[in-house]
Length: 100
Image (cartoon, rainbow, N blue to C red; front, side, top):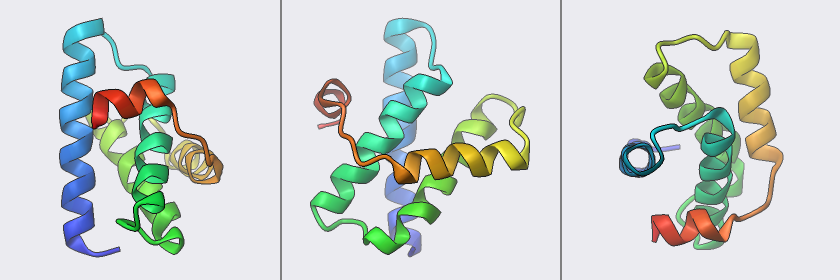
């Protein structure tokens, strides 16, 4: 995964997270998971991300979320969360509407 994609993912994460938090006053792990699966699957469906890079991108987004909550998630759990996101092929259209 190249640095440009990482920057795009980071920008999408920050924009979505701040907007969501300002509106709902929370951004839970479930909210993050819905966001991350939707974003990654949208990127793959639109050829912005290679399917072979999905696991790495999922882990990257998960580390950004962890950083935002004060690094409270252990490495073992980061791996489990990012794998769960990478294995999910769904798109939440409410999330997509907020993103795009």
